Image (cartoon, rainbow, N blue to C red; front, side, top):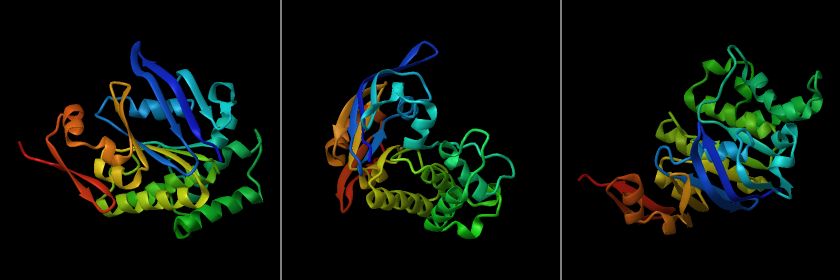
Length: 256
């Protein structure tokens, strides 16, 4: 399995620096959660790790430098679950998840029995087999998010990038999706790097947190090291209490 290492990663958008010398290291089987206020560069960091935005510095996917890899090779190693995935009109769940097999299907070729078997296995694992012939557009929010995750898992990538994976989900479906990812990464040793707005969920599921502000890393470590009340108040502009919970610190807003 591949780890991820970044050294001095930079990125610009419309001439404005969005990432400024980001360093990080994530081992196989580890979940790093990137937190920070809006506009901190969290999504840009994930897109840089996926190779879809130009970035300076060094990004290593296992023993290979991202900049030296072909796009199909990156896709076979890195799977991305975007915050707002694009789903083709009318596509069925099975065909949508099959898109994850694209790195393994020859140009101008068709999927083979092994690709169909892999998609079936993933759909079964995520309790989506009964929805395989339904349009993705007909699914509930939680079901659709599982379909998006299924497409990523069908890639058989060793690195999973999740951009706000619980956006627009109710509390129960948020927990369901996060626990599913947690179980999968422990089961097969995935590298998981995600962004999250909910700091309590970030603490519950992340092995480590990385606090990004203005494109720079201002804190990194275990959740209880990063989620200090004064740190959260300073960088998020919020008044909070942080209390110890059974699965990590709990961040509670306090009325001013």
